[in-house]
Image 1: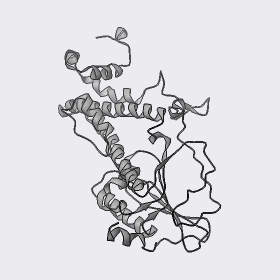
Image 2: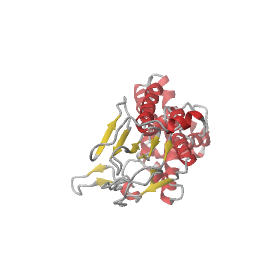
Image 3: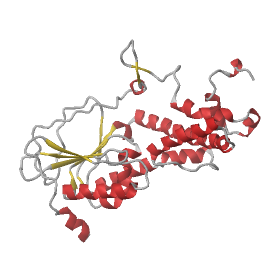
Image 4: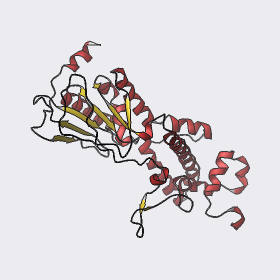
Length: 312
């Protein structure tokens, strides 16, 4: 262990334990989530620290701001995070682990909780990840094609590019793939900045002997996991509320009047892939022969009617 890391490990935390209950520190960013919780323990002088997410969407001050937040977390906890919880893989929740990696790598993460969607051994999680990667690839493709028409002065295409490109911010910012093929796009989707951020912080936790635990809804009540040389936390129970471990339930995204639940995106509804692929409608029919098989499939999804019902 380096001298710097050793000295940080013995720093006294600046965020004291509460007299009762929990203290919640919410960090203010332009757009992002980061919560530091301090729980009362059996030792009135020592807190149990839980960090939930650490991220912010891209901005001109993002690296400086998120690094400042990470340093404050290190000072508040004395360099010890007893439990790190990462809720989901969006840039505004995980960017700090990549942007401020030099700060986090010097800290000790005793326990790491991730959603079941990150579990490499979960079949549904891997199936959803494959679909997600294809969706991101479709997103790249839609932007590239719409950009050509936006450059030609088509206002509708310009708006489409702006709207769709804004979604890239949730995956770590736009990527220029104008000259890339579909396999290159899929490669970028698989190695997104959000994925890199999670992999990096998992490596930091593993270097201290903490392997990730994957949480499923319905679990609980769970006690806060024990941490080395840390006192117990009494009277605290954790319940895992989501995301549901059924693909049909994951598709329920809009409330209904009759069912008071939600519509699904299966069959008749407009899926994200189809919506993003709509930018391909501007691709002239004569150029169809120049499209790859994957691009043709995406273009086909962009039409509201089957080919036999279209009027050319």
